Length: 317
Image 1 (cartoon, helix red, strand yellow):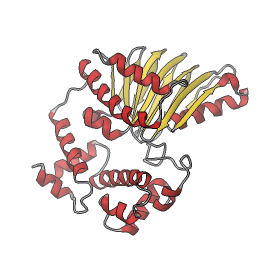
Image 2 (cartoon, rainbow, N blue to C red):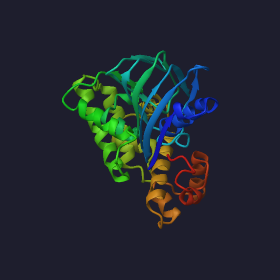
Image 3 (tube, helix red, strand yellow):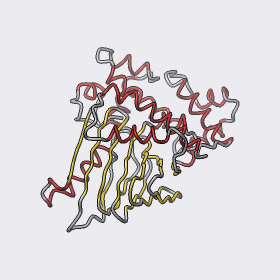
């Protein structure tokens, strides 16, 4: 588990800006930071990261954050960013969506897509990065809209907030095994609080999209999985399945490849003695050379190098 605590109060002034950017990239997302005050910029961040889950709380003076499209190898996690606004305001732009986040409200945005976040005044918030699959299974409408904002409601809203603050606290005593359990718990609480706020409504398009994604993930290890077999099983036309993939800003082939590579990377982490060829076959690849090529293109290293790396030397997933 990786932990970080950073404050500009204890950094020499010339280093504070670069240290702030480095802390955000390690704990939250690969971004570009702009419009920092050259004279009096100040900030503090604390957080921790384990596997597909990271969570950080921060306070800072005004600044802007920009990020481009994230791939699985960019910043680790390649999932959704959950922001809980505690103080100040945040202006979020992603695609056609524009959101103004005020204290007490939540935003969920797809971290794999370009976005711009502006903090026009001093800001305090908690940000968690959650695995895409876990979020989309509970809030399938995000596969179409990619962004959502609401004020959390219901009796479990405070529980969700307490989980996030505990995860990001520099004084927390959480261990790695706690982080694994909390990932699913946070996503479940997010679904419940969104439902109480009326933010989880699903239309027929969402249901079809959810059906396609679930079936593909269920059959992911089958090397004979094809666009036609998915369409046939779900009683959809081939063209409709392709359209659903396009609405997710992907294609059938790209989606399957990304999912299979993510699965392979996790097995490389958890199965130290299992031959790499066996892992490739179990994830649906039927050509080892092709698997090695795709893996290196996505993660920047070969599967064997990925397995033997030091924990912090390669960004995961």
